[in-house]
Image (cartoon, rainbow, N blue to C red):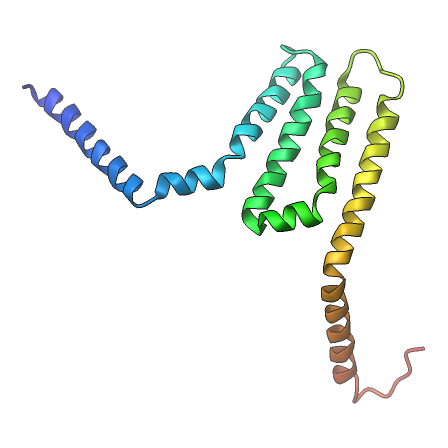
Length: 165
């Protein structure tokens, strides 16, 4: 066996050993659980690139926008938990459709009647519902932060006798 063959065989055996060891440690299952939204993100980005390189039609921007927004939402679900995503951020799924419609409207060669209106209505509805959902979730936290800020302001300004109002 020549030296080059020994080198390549040694590298392949070493790589196989490292891959088996990483698999036993659970690295690949962790990556599969944490990075699966890339299955949606990569095609969404590739569709955007394909359209902007003038190789695809503007209709591809509708699924491209939806795929990118949904993959970001699924990453949020992985990071902050699925309960948080589906309980508080569910209106963002409507926003994905709105963004896809808006991108299609903005880059279509012929403007579709009502497409911009539908995108704006869905986007506004999504943002209003998202704000309402997040506000109801974080109202207690906002109240606590506001009370702490007022308390700190009163403590810091107690030696200062000038009038504010």
